[in-house]
Image 1 (spheres, rainbow, N blue to C red):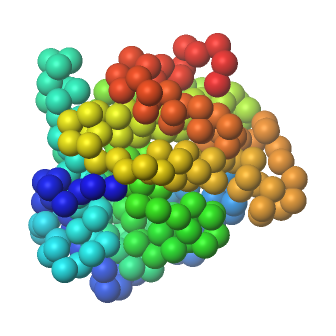
Image 2 (image 1 turned 90 degrees about the horizontal axis):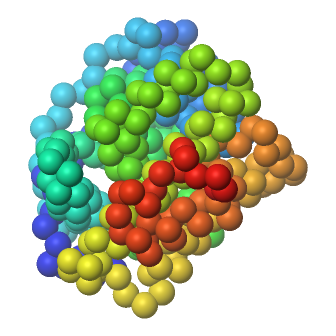
Length: 283
């Protein structure tokens, strides 16, 4: 990826090295265990954490800033986040809306959010209650070693997907879907979650298309890296690796094929309207 000339976001909270207590109802450990199980079964851990966060302890107060260029990985994250800010600010403005920038929180090991206490094992997540993205940068080692999805664009895709959830939150999509899930049975709620996650994949593709159109950020092979990352976190692959079989009715993020299809659709189209997964006859 070519990000040297990209504006760096100043919406970064660096909580790395800050220890946190377990401030979620039930002592925290139970919630983390549930979130871990949820992750291996293909369930969105952020949803588990949000539901569990009925009474959480105080959050750390850290000022947002732009990381130093010498901090290579944090600088990369700031560049990608800055690029998503530029792209979505333009998209929202064209639609007569104002884009509210999310904050990205870097943490080590565990973190307290408005959605509850989380350990790094749950992976990157977005908390709609505080409009913040959370990531332990060690996840990128897992992305390469465990999920076999190396490369900078694969790493950028992870951030762009969580930003996609922020876009859904700002547009009111997240609230409508969560309301429908509360009224639905388990299978229908899972199906809604799949459409939600596939839309976030498509929105990540929209960002990549628009950012590349504006500043030529993609190198040869980058698209393949992003598609490989989307496939690697498909529910079918995660479930097969975790328990040796696949249960499509329990999917919450979509299969590898579906995630690649919708990420590619956003990449090729570059428009918000291309990402209507909720009215799509075929996922």
